[in-house]
Image (cartoon, rainbow over all chains, first blue to last red; front, side):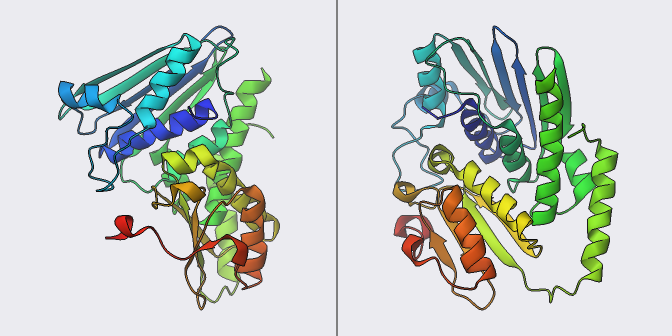
Length: 181
Length: 129
């Protein structure tokens, strides 16, 4: 499984990007007893048959890398859920989009550390894709929301190092605010 | 750090932009491409990304772009990072943890010398075909 929950989230949002989504919503909600994550996209979706196969680590649609026979993103999610007594579900409709949800127990000793959400958000916001990504984030009720379009509007070029540093500081300040409380 | 608003973010950007136009950068910029596939993420590509930002910032290197890509087919040597500095050969570095990322900034991007012990020359054949 991935080393941190944030790595897992990054990987799953990238699936949405690769599914040609133009609108992705990432909701990450932490409370003392629950970690609740929803990733909803309007990408190309999957048929029921493909969806079943996608849970198999030895399945890949073969479009990205012709000779590869593995796809570990979703299997990592289900492995983590299984090993920590959490829930993970994926719903998809071909041509409409895919929604991945999971709930983990923060107190479970086998659950990976949460990780660095600031850098996860920075990498996802600046991953080269045309669409929008909206992040809703909360810890024990305190939260913030930010979208890639807002960031793009404020900063412009998101691959410029100076803008990346500003974005990182911005995200860090949002995270700090909700973690302090 | 106090919670920043989008307005503050915008005005910071404008201040930086002004500084930038006053500076004569020569218009040649280096490019860093970080492999962010499942393999890269698992191996710590985000830490490398963070270290690049931090080191570029602390050395005040401005004219550099950082982009991301998927798996480059070198999963055994993740995190992998491609670096293109004008006038130097494009190289792919493997096993780039935070420490190596900082070395790449200091030695390659600023010092214009390759970090020889981490070089892989090009992506795996089945990826570039």
